[in-house]
Length: 209
Image 1: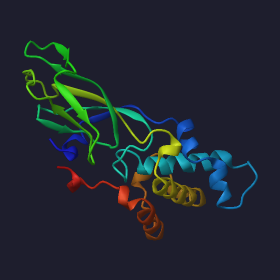
Image 2: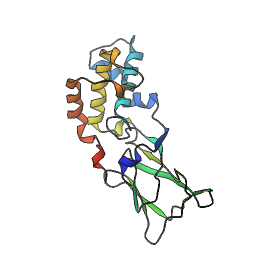
Image 3: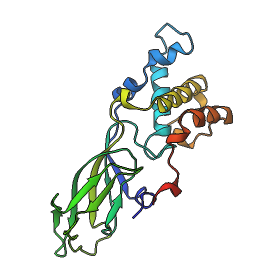
Image 4: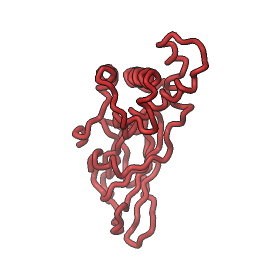
């Protein structure tokens, strides 16, 4: 099963908090690009930063997890190797499944391994092991995993630069920001800057195996 197939059946369990996002890029750092020293508009700067972060994170433009977060993915069947969305993968917390009697079971870690090598992290079947039989449920498997680069300092500079660029644009053009910034058309000039800064980190649907 490839990562593009897992993108839709995946549900966020813990998302980066506003406080964590503002460690990645502070209002003061954003104000410095505009040579602003007063704090009267700090709340507006912070809102622009959070909206810019949301544009890129997880199911956003990058298709990557930026800060540490937890997701549940729901493959519909076992495969020798199962790719997980929103790299970089940090760890797999648990794998549960519905057995043939309809009961929820936790898969023993002796059955599977986890790899963080390659573009996508994977869960794979260990040698000499076999996947358990499944109940005929629409979502018989649930993989809970943590992903993201970690805290703010661990995020690549190009991604941080792109967030700062878009946050500056959002602050200067507040009418173009609202609850779903991914639905807002970003001007071509700003997109050029974003592509230059963070384009190499973007994952396209055809990059999955």
